[in-house]
Amino acid sequence: MAENPTASAPTLAQRLEAVETRIANACARAGRRREEILLLAVTKVFPASVIRHAWDLGLREFGENYVQEFETKAAEVSTLAGARFHLIGHLQSNKSRRAAELFQLIQTVDSPKLARRLGECASPLDVMIEVKLSPEESKYGCDPAGLSALIDVIGSQSNLTLSGLMTMPPWSDDPEQTRPYFRQLRLLADRHGLNGLSMGMSHDLEAAIEEGATIIRIGTALFGSRKKA
Ligand SMILES: *Cc1c(COP(=O)(O)O)cnc(C)c1O
Image (cartoon, rainbow, N blue to C red; front, side):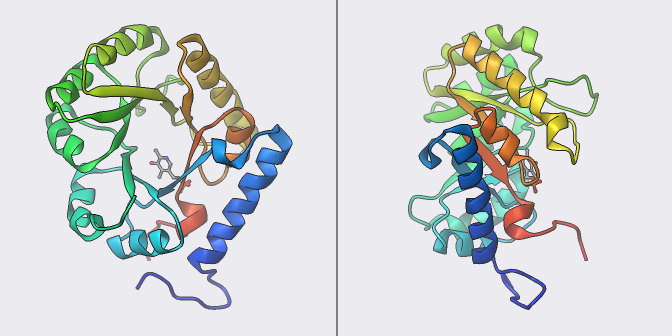
């Protein structure tokens, strides 16, 4: 069941309204317009019925982390008019062909090898580069020092359109700890003449908007906790 509205569990519609209020307040503080920011609904772990419900409420852009997981839902959401699906999880190059079929935008291109593989898929595809701004071993992403080379490789693939940069800072529940990473991503994008900035999640979307985000990736604040019962 997609929704179980009780006094303690807000509905998706209520959560969406709360998120929109937070976005509006952040925009007002930052002197930005709401239309500058894309709300990407992150639906990993949740079933296709949740995507359909979100679409009913007007959401059109969805983020998924795993090629295999989305494969199981894709047929059920393929009829949703205007819906676009972004891959926001790490992509192994051996899954690039399938990913290019399933997703309209791949936010996590992080190596020349992956860019070339996606280039071989021929179908037009929007991509972003995931940038790794912290030395944590577990994080994927292109090192800032390798960014120029990767941008060149993407530019040489005629089917790929690069729309910007994405990052996933080290986890902190304090948005002021992640703000410097957002700022750093924006500086990198400016330096390379890129406009798109995918940054900010449920707990730090305000800081991300203040630092220039054009895509915020929101899961928990819309759909609740992903923890298994
Ligand atoms: C899960 C996920 C999100 C959403 O995180 P929430 O804190 O639930 O909003 C955003 N971006 C990426 C890359 C994710 O994997």
